[in-house]
Amino acid sequence: MDEVAATVHCDAEGILVERSNRFLAIVDIDIEGDVSREKAHVHDPGRLLELLYPGNRLLLRKADNPDRKTGWDVIAARYEDEWILINSVFHRGIADWLLSKDDNPFGRLEGLTPEVTVGHSRLDFMAEDSEGTPLGIEVKGCTLAVDGTALFPDAPTERGRKHVETLIGLVRGGKRAGLLILVFRPDPMEFAPKDDTDPRFAEAFWRAVDLGVEVHPVKFGFDGGRVRYLGEIPVADHP
Image (spheres, rainbow, N blue to C red):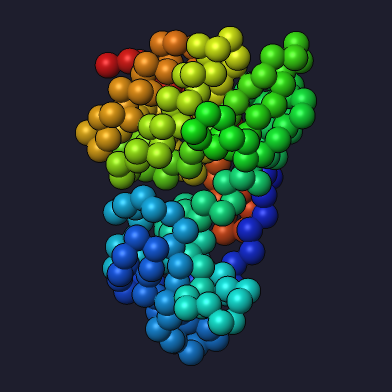
């Protein structure tokens, strides 16, 4: 346990001034005592109200393209005494690391292929299990937790619901389908869909569980440089 799933480089720490829109943050960045106000890209469409509020501390990385309108990327936000990774750019690599392990939650996989079109959707991965059965996997990132329960989504997601419907279609067609939920919080003890935020997603989620879509919420911690694998947590009981 406590394996390193990824390393993430950060260039500076900053203080959030405001989140101007879903993808833009105004941040005060202190580099060797020189504070400058900068625009930073938020690579997560969620509300993140408990993380992106004025005055909270952020970890940032300098953008590679000097001509970009936002010169920085938001990587993580502080919550109590932990850094919470909130940049979805890293989800694919972390999921690939986990799914490539022989002891991953879905069992040993062969031919793991990213970004595969299935019907009218594009799933994050397709693979085959040890018996040659096709397996489609969709990956979701989760940063919200309330009273020990990790919750997704924190904003309505029609796209997420359609992905779940695609997974249901795979199961009905005799294939395996899985929903891998990357929980970037060390504290939750279980996972549940946030039905008051998106009841349509929650309904599809529980229907998927009942029909045999395999749901695996997996926790990760972030120390500002390393993403640490903390193990799987169960799905909460169906309400």
